[in-house]
Length: 276
Image (spheres, rainbow, N blue to C red):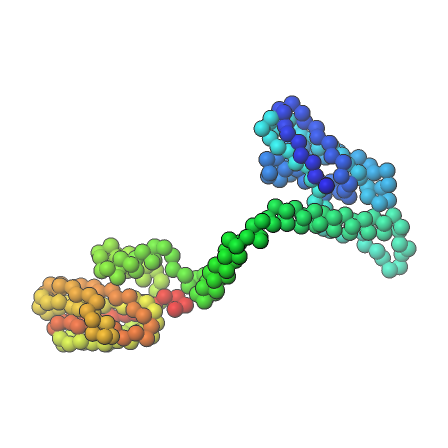
């Protein structure tokens, strides 16, 4: 095993290890599970067979002794970089060739240890019914996320809250949704609503929010109707007062607005969701 664990005592600064390695960069130091890259020095012990592997161990010396509560781990993780470049016009150095093969063998050993450790640590989890169920749910979530398209198409929490408020036609909802709509700037100008008292219908070509601003000529009600004629919303209007109605709409689903006589209609627009 190319690793060794020590417990600090607040006094000891130097800790020995005996696993073989090729360069100082192959030696990793962890304190309480976290890799550190400063505050210590690695002193190498030359191997008795440097033609195979240059170093057979060494000592890690800390500038400050680890505390008694510190767990120190010294381990090997061979840096995966070529250290020998064979030239076609030169003779192959047997020592370099030997070290190269040893490098490959020791790297495979590290991989083998990592795989075995993972299998031992998580074998019960990987074979459990809970894990299989988790994978199925994860796959289902992945499919749903893919169906949404890019991340930019997913509404933020504040957007969703604003829509929920606007659906209930609260003052807070209006303020939030208007602010959000102004920021998006993506809209389609409409002209389906007239000034005469009547029921006007509209089939949205996008998912979004239908915004209507008008001035009634007399105090009366405005109502929003579903395709089946069911009333979704009714609001009392005051004569001569400018008012706003925001209606969340579904692409291709007809919506009807029943209005009294209006003295002015100056804003009819569909603000649509990006990507929808």
